[in-house]
Image 1 (cartoon, rainbow, N blue to C red):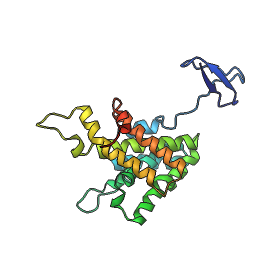
Image 2: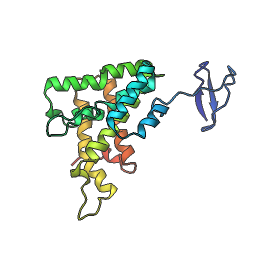
Image 3: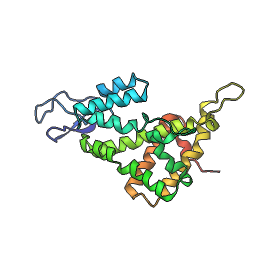
Image 4: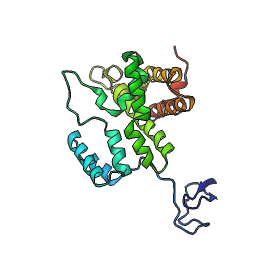
Length: 232
């Protein structure tokens, strides 16, 4: 048995796990579950079918023009980052990818104090994040889900996706356990940086630690306990 709560009247009830009531026995209205802050909206589904970042950005802006305070449109803009911006110079500017903000935990030495402060601010207090949180059904739940999504995407793109961690040998792809082991060190580095950061309060540290651990475990579901094994 598990305890659930009707979001309409606030009453709690005990039910069998996996058996959600259709109607609340207290208020008589259709049972309202806590909404998933990352559930796909019709806009999200249309964006998934489009490959061009520029066209995606236009679609998001059109949705915002029609409804400036729409939660799903603001959420889409938040995660879109600056993907629609043209590349500058000869190198690839990974900072246009929103999840790249998590690089401050893997490679803090790559940034000066001012740059670190700016990236921490964008990750944790950015204007678009604040706007989206103000529109979310549950701001705290959305913030947790936001950190988890970015952490997972960062580990997937910039750690698992790095050639040094996922390079084939003689044309044969590395086994999952080999890739998981190669990715442990940079993920541990992220965890150490979060714990040691003086820019984070204890509650935010816990959220970030959980987000990074969850991101690794979701990508390597059979090897999540590697993060807890002694180093060396």
